[in-house]
Image (cartoon, rainbow, N blue to C red; front, side):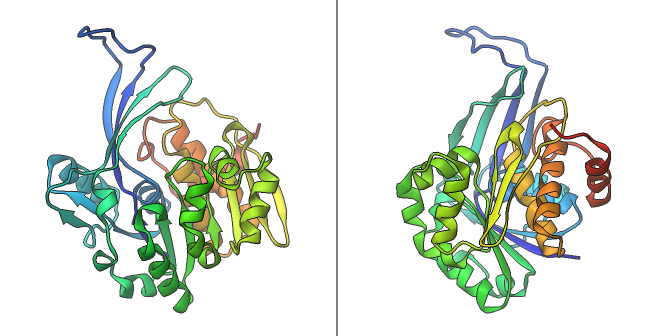
Length: 308
């Protein structure tokens, strides 16, 4: 079983569906569903990896509050080891409220909370060295600790991946510049990639990251699918033809499928296909942890389902 450590941004998402408009003043409106799920560039990826059959542990910070207790409970219910999650006093657990509209889009209100308080002292580097793969979600929140984590992983022959939470602005790429040569897989979305690299095409954006030392770039592009690039190979992989319910967590689920495919020794295209197929499982349901699937069923889905 592949052992993965997910370090960094863990969030409790509150989903409200279906929301066509925000009530004015102090008025109210009825909705179909309100539910909570574990999420974040590390937490959401951890949950989906666990559903796919990996052995997953989270390293993160939560507040000493009901939101933190709920987030930990949901991670544990999805098979994620939370023994290395630290509780911080005086700060709330990171959370988002997501009003889901009729086409699956989801604007958000977000509180950074405890994600901004995780330090290197909170991170078990021995666990990092003992993993098969280390995924860092939100390295921009970790600063020098992100570099230390990636260096520890690389020193032990552990493969690495990174996904950012920050919006696409060059300043954020500069903030993690020291991480880039230590990253095997960089996993942005299309808007992030173009903004981070100040380019106009995903091909040019990916090349800009490769030029700065990243081993592989796999960028999600919504209904267009994903674009993947290494120094030796580039390709577009189409998304699957599905009825979208909620796009929350699709990027994190692609990351889970893609990095697991690579960890299992699958080639670039097969791994990206697994990523897109995993994202399709999440998009057909409400929230990152919804739906019942495993690696075998996702592979079967990828074989049987047409692409766009």
